[in-house]
Image (tube, rainbow, N blue to C red; front, side, top):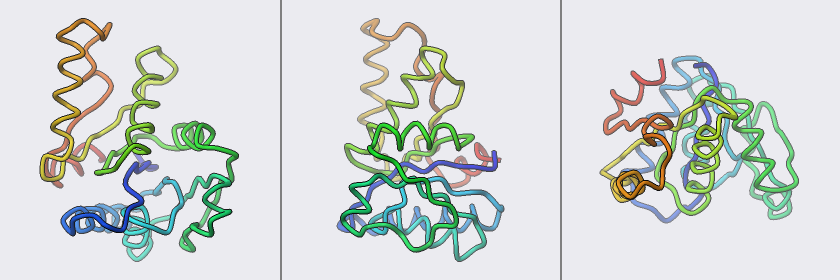
Length: 177
C-alpha cells in the first residue's frame, strides 16, 4: 500500500494527543516512502500529518475543493494538486488515488469520507477499506453504532468486512505495510 488517504480534522482547536499521533503517522509515512493523499488543507490534523510526512520524505497529494481555494486554506506542502468542484468529487478522487484510507479523529467531514468509502464497498464498487485509528478510544462510539446496525439487521453483511480498527500506532503500521 503505497498511497494512503488520510481523513481527519481540519480543526486547530483539538487535544494535543491527536496532533502528536497525526505527526507520528506522517513521519512514518515519509520514512516508509508512502504517498499521502488528503484534502489539502493547511489547518488542523490535515496540515500536521502533511508537514510531518513531508519533513520525512513523503510525496504529498492534495485533493482540493474550490471552496478551500477561495478561502486561501490550501497547504503549500503539496507535490501534486487535484482541483475539485465540490466535496463529492474530492471523495471520489481520494478513493481512486489511494490504496487504503485511514480515519484519524475528525468531525462531520471525516465521517462523510468514511461512509462514502464504506458505502461504495458494501455495494461492490471497490474493495478498499477504512482503517479507524482509534486514538484514545475516539472511534468507540461509532464502532458501537456500527455493531448496533448489524444487530438490528440494517447491514446486509458484516460491516467489519469494510473496515479495520487500529488501537495503537503499532497496529496501524502493521495494517499499512
